[in-house]
Length: 331
Image (cartoon, rainbow, N blue to C red; front, side, top):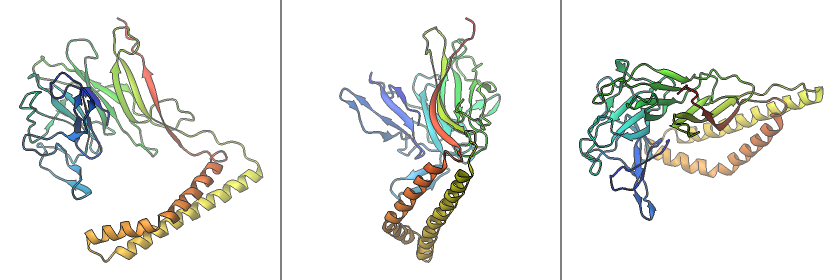
């Protein structure tokens, strides 16, 4: 997620680097004819770079490992990556973000940019003298010289609660107070406060804050661009008696439809409960496929009822937008 254009193999052409929800960073090599198909970034032993959770494409299921864990690491799920020279040795390392526990790690490149040799283990990134953990978990990471002191600082976006009422995400920056040979990130400076949600209109980014820093207005300083979901609940309108009655009918219809869907899945669980795991999964998919027309019909009924109910009893809205935070710091 949050792709980066960077010359990852030092051949003079931009490549595309991004981690994805499968738990690993990938890169797509840029050529004169366009981008090649993406492949996983591998360590020097030919293994995928992960934290703990990763999608096993061979077994077609989620898997887990501790082989990449540094001492003190929590259980993590790698979903963001940023290629950068983190250790100042002239080649591209990988900065890694954790969607599960909020850790920030990096993977050392002991080779060169043209011939990467990534170490077999991650390393914890320190901030304010301790391992950096991002509240709300990491969405994306950037290194950028936001205070114009010649040292790249660490900018982090966070996810927050992506669907419910719990606090949302924000954006923080950790200034680098190092000597240009070792990075020493400071405590978080909040650029966008984590959202408490509860607005009546889409006024701010609430969850899944994917940010970038760029001189958007060409005035010589870095502005902040944030793509995210906004969560809001429109005010409840004054309903007539007939409208109140219809709203109650629609709510009962939705409850009944939900019960029918739950009953189908419960029936499939019972039909496959005594089978071995591999056989159970295959049989469950087979039975589920046979019930898809019925499930599709129930889904269409639910969507129609929700469309009619929403103007009467507005529910929580969730929609993505892009926000610009202009840097107005005096020169």
